[in-house]
Structure formats: structure tokens, C-alpha cells
Length: 113
Image (cartoon, rainbow, N blue to C red; front, side):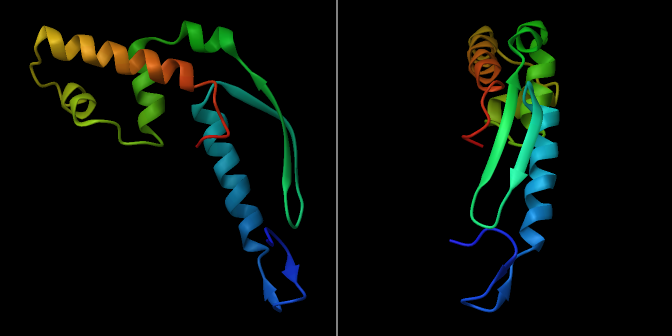
């Protein structure tokens, strides 16, 4: 599969995908608690050197976790209701805490997004 550049076999230019990848890397670098130390985008694959900042993840407030996560994903309805300031039950707040904890762990992830 051709990722970037000009494909001689099909005579198609896929160079625009390189910018898509750079834009996506910038987005996930800002949201996930990682630092992109180096990268290389070739015609059929790419390489990333990452630093996973566990300390940064641990220091985020629940609201920061929600805000970061929602920049890429909408999240479940209960989170949206919480962000809209709706009055929620104790059970709903417990569910939100569980979701936020799961998201906190996932802020260290990159390859699944």
C-alpha cells in the first residue's frame, strides 16, 4: 500500500497524505500525554520515537482529562450531559469517574487512535 508520494504503478500522487499525517501527529501530541521526539514518513510506512509522559497523566485533573479526550472523541452521552452542567445523580458521577480513569490510562496511548 502506498502511503505518501507518487505511485509509479497507478500514476497517482499521494503526497497530500504526508500533511494529513503531520496534522494528526500534531493533534495527538497536544491531546495525549506524549512527546514526539522524532518521526519519519516514508512512501509506505512511518516511524515515531515517542516519550510517554506518565507524570503528566498523573497530574491532570479529571476535567483536564475530559477536555483533552473530547478534543478528538465526543465521548458518551453522560459526559456530554456533565459538561453541559446538567444535574446528575451520585451513580452518574461514579460512572463519570470510572470513564475518566479509563481515559486517563488511555492518554498514554497513541497507536489505537
